[in-house]
Image 1 (spheres, helix red, strand yellow):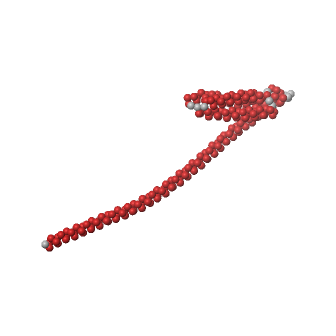
Image 2: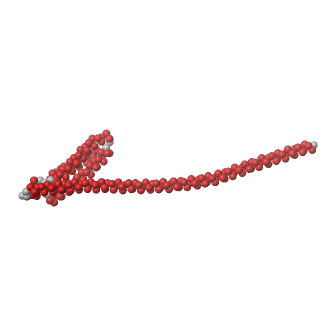
Image 3: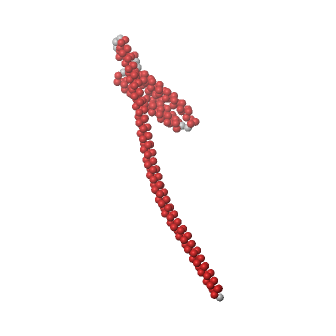
Length: 224
């Protein structure tokens, strides 16, 4: 697991070294060349952020006893990226002496003030753009969470529907069982009643037979 983290560290070192070099070159350029380099740096910064996310996932999988060391290293890398982002932001609105001279030419201090104003407006626009990008990423993340929540809700509803059908089937089986038990109970009650009636009839017949025997013996003895 730590070997994967170290591989990411090597990639991180390579990318940040390239970014540092390119960010330092941005103020020295102008026109289309500067625009292309800015776009390239912005793309590489996004790659570095994704690399940090991968490193963060790796740190979470590292055993607790070793995690603190890697967490500290990851924190320093995040701080380094934050510094690169600040340097990148400054470099986009900065001009070298040569570029400034080309922009100003022999115009006086009024052009200098206009350039400063232009740089301030550009910095303000860049800040707004960054805020819009962050808001867009948050909206995308919120939308993804909403979609996942909806999927979980649909799965829960499907499970509840299945449980409801199972409960209804169980109730139907209980009703059938109760009806069968009631029928069985009535049958047993009828059988018990007939058994009692048969026993009473046997007792009556036995009593009649016994009485008949006694009377026969009585009249026989009396006749003698």
